[in-house]
Length: 382
Image (cartoon, rainbow, N blue to C red; front, side):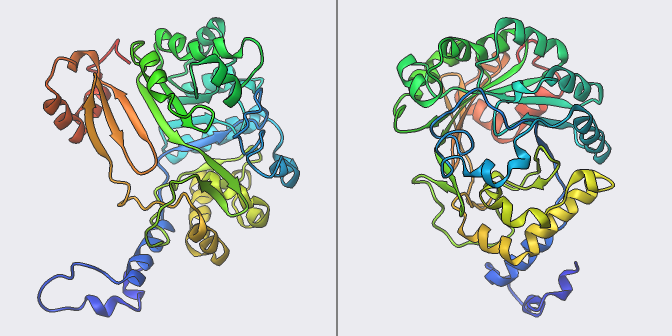
């Protein structure tokens, strides 16, 4: 779409000083035009909707979404994605040009019966493979198999390292606690890049510092602190963290590409709260000739559908990228990167730990540490 088609373009025909602020209508016109031509940079693939946990806060298997109404409304999603379908998607993703894939689920990805084959196939296509898990199935033997299959990175949800709290917010099943809390340590020792994610809830409030101390001494790469959300028919409701500024369609920081187990593409998990109402308007990767076509259809829908505009406008996870400017500071060998929604503690590579804090801050701010990692300067220090 050419910007000269904009009814506000005449306002840019000025003489003199460049305007400091554009009208909201013009900003939204530009942002919607850009959104409709969005180029995906990563993809999240939902492998299964089965789970070995029934976490109370979970919108799929716990009490978070109208007591199980999600799967009642979307029964076709309560399945595993067939291996052959996964291969088809991976091939299309690689053809599209992506280099990274996240294997995830509104359940436990490790419950997919061919998870090791899937990881191996992704690696054979040159992809960097990330897996999300609750850790309860990651015994020492399983971690070894995952690494041998080629898994590069794992993000494990651990909301407490205290057994009593863990049983309240995660699982009371015998053995799950001990397996899960040590899973990140085993994965790190195997050579994977490891993240631990903590979601603050009523039952574990104030326990992040204890969790941080437990994992920071083990060399875990990233430790994240997030906040609880609930999935509702309005979308995602963020507890006490909603954005209070003006809504502008097309500027949300959460746009990505998620592929559901039946091949349907969505752009954020909030859409699952009203998936039934929009399902027939969404692209399906198995019905598109390639991934590019599916992505183009998805973001054209996001940019121009009136119902989607209404839903995005009332979504409590909306945060424009410009608002989520991240603050950075060095703390105890970690770089703390905090934004509007969460805080991420990034473990400084051992080769840089002796540098003064202000130098480290400068290197991270300029993204030079990321480039050093890409160039392989920190081998042996994942």
